[in-house]
Image (tube, rainbow over all chains, first blue to last red; front, top):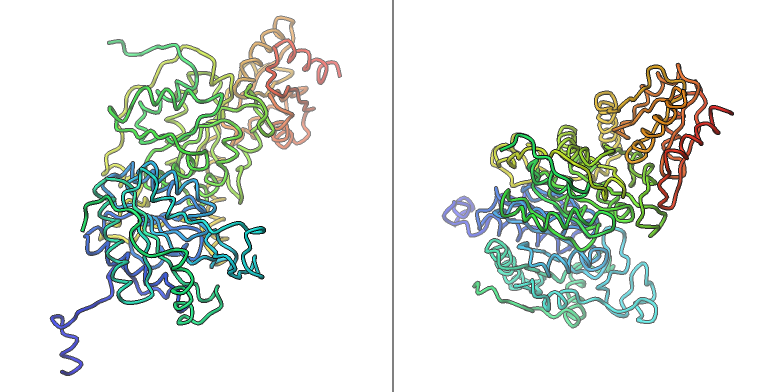
Length: 257
Length: 362
């Protein structure tokens, strides 16, 4: 088969989602954001919701998510994305309303907004990137930073006496009556990416059915903040992050495939 | 059916009824004295069953204002209300709205401070309201109602101004106006805008990207300093336009006045009685009532200052508006201040006495 034959439309098995534009991403090489952005764009397209999606970006590395996925966006104040999304969805019930947030945004400064939006059963989907560190500001301790993990603000490792414990907010979310789909995924391997995509699709579909809130945590790497190569970061995540944040559904009352 | 519906109600209730009637799409708020009747009235009226207006009790004032930011970003006519400590919490969201040029209405039924302060009335959030209040160089359009009627009327006016200029607007009321009952003519019912009307009025709104246009991105962020300065210059030009076109004020007996009291909101009602008492004594005293606190009627006060012997700023705080008056007067006439704090509402007699002591006999 020649190259020209391979690129014939009938032979194509994969293409970049149209919603994902060609702007060069500011994310560090090896960062999980790029993959998750692609999945979000793919799912919106596959659902045919390109013209009906309003996404809310956070403060953090994903603040510029609006530069890469060509849907309408609102850039929220730090931690407040679920409040914005709650209002937008209530005012525009036929829109797909999603937030895309990191751990500092969602599980620290925005804990109240997160818990209350989920507990009200807002018909929104929250994509939660948990890389256990503040990436944008230069690698400080996050609410999800593991015990012993070194960051710019716990340079000798996280200690309970000084810093308190990691917050498992996804587990908390699964206990709330307002949530109907709470899952934890990752994007470090091809099978994991496929599962994560399925989870994002389920969350978006669930939010359109209006049967409660959806939270998809993606346990992610921040190789720059962790000061590791992308490959080592993936390995470190598998060995350490997954112990504290095990993958799988924490709650699913959606009756969706 | 009578053309005008005259009803007796509290200022806070008038805000709620006016919101439902003027086609407001959503209210997001959190209880705090002395403004809780706004949310309570809306909850009792259940407008979601009639006009389709969304009403939501949020988890905090921080969430409330960010709901207003989200709703406004999606082109909807949305509002919140609170009292001073709650408005302090909202400053983050108001600044984001100003930066992203998102319209919305914030009602402040002021109480005395600082801190938890008191639940009694005050006008001590004047600086916060007229200087922006949050981070960055911005202004909020501020309307100061002096009656329950104006509480009702200013809801629609605020939305009109907010959408005209793509800027947050504030009704700066206080515990007196919020809690007192007066007769009021409620505005006629106006339907909420349809999706087509909204798209026409707000082509910038984030409501889902249509094929024919680029994505609508609502943000206050811009990392390139030259672009950020341009954005700021654009905002400043807009604020200048508002200063030129939207100043509102009322003058009572100023034409022949030797002395003028400047007072807004509830203080202007007390001042109105005070100038009556002065006139009975043969003292020629007038009242200038700023209706917009930002933009401030600086030119009008400047003109007035050329023909009077003195100006008294009467405000229920430690003396905040007096600074704007002094800036406007530019030394043309003596400017004095009188006010009380801590939730004390002064009497007209006290104001007359202060006027005499600080200006007339000085």
